[in-house]
Image 1 (cartoon, one colour):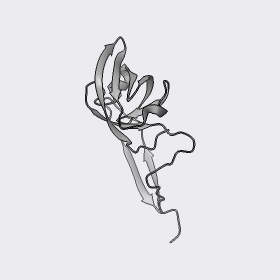
Image 2 (cartoon, helix red, strand yellow; image 1 turned 120 degrees about the vertical axis):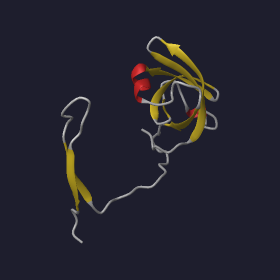
Image 3 (spheres, helix red, strand yellow; image 1 turned 135 degrees about the vertical axis):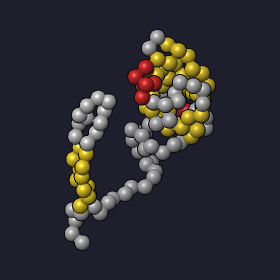
Image 4 (cartoon, helix red, strand yellow; image 1 turned 90 degrees about the vertical axis):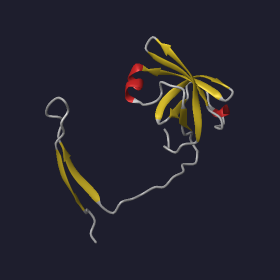
Amino acid sequence: MFTGLVQAIGRIEQVEPRERGLHLVVQASPIDSSHLRVGDSVAVSGCCLTATSVQGTRFQVDVSEETLARTANLDRCADVNLELSLALGDRIGGTFHRSASRASWWCALPDRWPLTWRSRGRLRSTESA
């Protein structure tokens, strides 16, 4: 589980093609990678990836073709946002919001190709003033 709050800016240092995707080497400093273990989840620019190797301040991940098709900029050496997954007892930062109104909405499935969407809705308060 992730908070969505960026902990550090890292860098993809190596990109190696694999049979079904890519292998990446990511420089993770200044994140304390002493808490990162093989098999742990890391959000790399918002995409959840699994560490396959951890060495000092670097970790490695394999990225599938499907992930590459749906996620931008993991196919090149570049700066990336990093976040380690939450552990039980970690502080959850950010802001929690509660809205005084709720929305009701209707949405239809696509009715033709290329995708065309139809929807309609209205906002209405569900709490008395």
